[in-house]
Structure formats: C-alpha cells, structure tokens
Length: 219
Image (tube, rainbow, N blue to C red):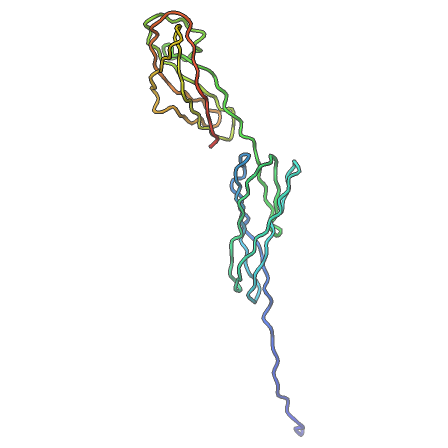
C-alpha cells in the first residue's frame, strides 16, 4: 500500500485536580465541663493529582439548641500531603453535641460540674468522725477537728480548700486551730470524701463558734 502522508503532533494530558479527603476526627475530651474548652481535630489529605488548598467546615448542634459553625483553611498541599485542621471551643451551653467535619461525625457532652457538699465540722472520737454538735467536751480537752466535703459527681474531681478557719471561745476571742493536714487544700475524686484536719485545745467552758471560707474548683 502506498504511503500518502505522515501524522505528527502532540497534545497535553493534565494532572488530576486537587481533591481532599477528611479522616481521623478526634474530640477531646468527650465530656467537658461547662465554660471549659473542647478540642476537635481532623486530618485533611490531598488525594488528587495537583497541589491545592481546602477550607474545612466544622458544624454541629446540641439537644439544647446551641449551634457550632467554624471553618479552617489549610495551606497549599502537594498531592499526598496532609494537614491537621483543629479547633478549640469554649463551651458555654450545656447539652449533648453532634458535630460533623466533611462527613466525619462525632459527639461530646457539656456537663455542669456538680459542686461538693460541705458535710460539716467533725470531731474525731476514737477512730470515728462525728459532728461537733453531737459530742460533749470539757475544759482541757485536746481534740482533732476536720472540715469535711463529699463530692457527689460521678465524673469530676474537685479541689477543696478552707481559708480563714477560726474558732471563737465563749468570750468572743479568736482561737486559731493548728493545721494537722499537709495543707488546707485537698482533692476529692468522683464520689470521694475529703477531710482537712486541725487540732485545738478547749480552754474555756461555754458556747464556742466557728467560721471559714469554703472554696473549690473542678479539676
């Protein structure tokens, strides 16, 4: 067969455009205390054939009507490269939250930190702690007292302290008890009880009173 002509030329095949996938959604902690921060992150990977940047949206809502809508813009990612998108959110509304990041779904809860209950001022009789109001004292007694809290939370620990703890004798004079505990601060774990211990000598007969500032913070 006779050759009539020849074909010669070229053409371009473009690289696949940038395409992004989001994975590995992490929420820490899954139970956060009211007015504290929850951290949310996800891995953004360029699975396409060209470099590019991507904006990731974090969206969510709670069963109490609160909403979340925030973005994260990655830098320019080469094909196969990844970047972690992250958010730190201060949670001021209680509720159960469901959030999504480009199809990844997670949940967390914002809980109210239950405050420890002050049990009262106790006195040690033998090995048993009893309310001071239930025990009889005489002049000259050297007794061990304790301020006592109970933490009703099943989730959170509380750091409890007492400041300016004083007794007043029957004449209204201030008596400062001797601190026996390592400090005037103690930590009550979930469901736990803490005692801050003191020693005092009753040198006068009559009606004694006590006062102090009770403080605490959730851990």
